[in-house]
Every structure is written in C-alpha cells, then in structure tokens.
Amino acid sequence: MQPPSRRIRQRRAAALASVTLLTLTISTAAGSGRLTGDTPNTGGPVTLAHTTGHGPCRISGPLDVQLSEGIPTGPGYARSTGTVRALNLMVDFPDAPGQGSALTRLAEFFPQTQEWFTTSSYGRLDYRPEAPITRWLRMPRPFAGYGIARGAPFEPAYRALAQDIVAAADPEVDFRSYDLVNVLVTPNAGPSALDTVLSVTFAGNADAPVADGVAVANASFVYSRQDDGSGSYGDTGYRVLPHENGHVFGLPDLYTQDGGGAVGHWDIMSEDWGANNDFLGWHKWKLGWLDDSQVGCVAAPGRSEHVLSPLSRAGGLKLVVVPLSARSGYAVELRTRGGNDEEVCRPGVLIYRVDAGVDTGSGPVTVFDSKRNSGGCTRSPNVHAELSDAPFGPGENFEDRRRGIGISVTGTQAAGDYRVLVTRR
Ligand SMILES: [Zn+2]
Image (cartoon, rainbow, N blue to C red; front, side):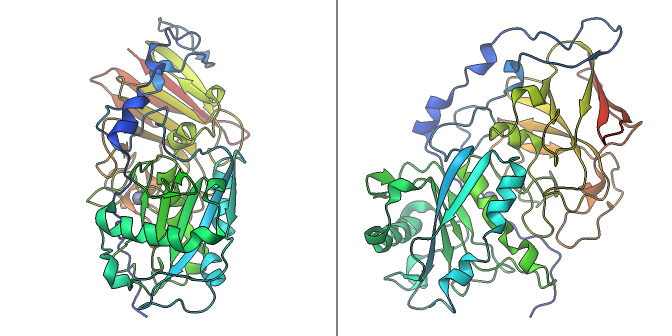
C-alpha cells in the first residue's frame, strides 16, 4: 500500500446542463418587492430578526453558468426533497472483472450515503437506494475501449458507456421508477483515486440516452476507492457519492484548480476526502432543506441582530444572507461539531461569499478566514488545514468597509446558539 497522501485530489467539474434547459430558470424571485421586518433604517436599538421578504437574497446567475449557486435551482436536476429513489448499478468489464460480490461494492456506499442525506437534510430528503440487479452488470467492451479518462466528455465516451449500461439493465429495470442513477464501477477499472479521480456526474443532461421513455439525465459514476491509506476508508470512502449526488441535485463544485483553498472542509462539494463534513447552509436552503423562516435576509440598511443555531442541529435560524447584488451576497451560519460536521476544531460563525455568476469549479463560494495564515487547527488528514479555524468567535468581526457591511459575533447563548449583529449602511 502506498503511504498516505495528504494531498487532496481534485475531481473534474463535470456536471453538464444544457443551455436550453437553463433558459427556463430565470428567477422571478428578485421582483418580490420590499423587505419588511428586521432592518430599521436608523442606527437605533437593535431588533430581533424575523424576515418575511427573501426575494433579494435569492440571488441567481446568468444563463451561461452551467451549474449555478443561484436560487431556485433550474429544471432538469433530480429533486432534493421528499422520497428520492436512487438506482444503483454495479458494472464491470471484460478486462476488469468485478472481484467479489457486486453487493460488497454497494455496501461501500450504503447505508452511509442514505444516512448522510437524512442527517444533512434534517429528514427532508428520504433517499431510497435500490439495487434491483444484485450481480455485476458486464459491459460489452473492455474498459479501455470506452476512452474514459479524467475530463472525458459525455460525447463520445460516456454516451457509449451509458448506452451499454442502459441496454444491459433495461430488461430487469424500469427506469421510470428512479430519480437518479448511481453507476458504481468495479474499483479495478481505471487508475487508483490516489493518482486520478475519475468519478463524475452528468446532471440535467438533456443528451442522455432514453430508457423506458425517460432520459437517464442525472447519473453519477463512481470509480476506484478514495482510500488515502490512513485506515479511515470504511468511515469516509463513501463520501464521494454524496458529493457526486450533490451535482445531481444541481450543486456546483466548490474546489478550484488550486484545490480546496476557497471553501476548505466546510462543504462536501469542496472536499469529499477525509473526515465527514456537511453542506453549507446556503446549499441546504437551495436544496429546500431550510424553510424561509430559518433564513434571515438583510437587504435594507440598518442594524439587525440574529440568533443562529448550529447548522448540524434541526430547527432554529440557520442562515443569514446579506445580498450584495442580484448575483452575489454574504452568507453567515454557525458551524459546530455535530451531525455530519465531525471535524470542526474551532466552532463559530462561518462567513462566506456566494456568487451565482461564477460557474462550477471556478470558485462560486469563498470562505473568509478569521485567522489568516494561522495554519489552522485541524490535524485530520485530507482536511484543508488553513481554513479549518476560519469561523469567527465571540468578539470577532467581519467588515466590508467599501460596501459598509459589518458582521459581528456578539455572544453565545445557553443552548449553544450564537448572536450575530449585522450592520448595513
Ligand atoms: Zn464534483
């Protein structure tokens, strides 16, 4: 076995959404009028936030952004609330025959992936993994014959593979019954994930082959094993699948060409190696896992105080958004150890910028580091260290002087909640 690698491999940003589909996604939210409630225009007494107008906080991106942070998510992706049925197909090849039982491959991802979504969504996503074919599904061509490489496009490599998968499974599977497809490739096909991560998702893919009258438009392909040799594979190896399924639900990659330096370990779309971590609150709102009453929207000038409850716990205020434009804004949330957030070494208020005009893999989210160049507080392998102590603690402030925006952590409360004061010129 290779020595553990602390380097986090990048996965290609590869969700494809057709531009035609995206033309339908123009948000109607921005026109929903005035904010009422939490933002008095004077510098007077602080009011507790209860916000009724979220329109200005539902930022949205231009049409040429394939996978946008904008709300609402465009059509064509799998729905992310209620019962979602996931078809799992374990495939192998003549030159890479599956070793052991196909159900053993399935068990590398379940029930953990299902539990991960139940926890992250506070029970709002009822993820039902199904495997109607319990054996390896043998592809007609050798793996090498498909031309699957990192960055391979849908045409022609993945189209051929997807067509062969559909043809092999169709006699035993009714594709109309499923919301998304997980293709769990035998780990001996292709390179080790330590060398190249091939795992990829085609989401909202209008060019997908049709089976049983429905396009297989949302499919995640998982290769190899994300095993860094640290002995944690059994606990963390499944995490590539919630990441890939995040694309199926319309989420972009948050890592960039430089790796996890924009968001660190604060979202599984940034880092899916290493210890468990959750989605950002922004993603939970986008996915429909937070009610509007759990999101404060600070669009008007004034001062407002917000009591944030930990993102890992159900209920309470989870997110405060300070819009900067129709496309971007600051998001504020409380991250503590709990739920899917196993590796939080400095709990506190995470502040980040969301830009719906920036595409997947180009840095649509940027986390602000309260302790720059500190080296971070984590000792966990494959967790971006520098940003691990990014959250702001009591008495610390974030300031955007140019725009006249201040975000201060003013204190904590008995239940573990944090008070945050937002000022806006
Ligand atoms: Zn990805």
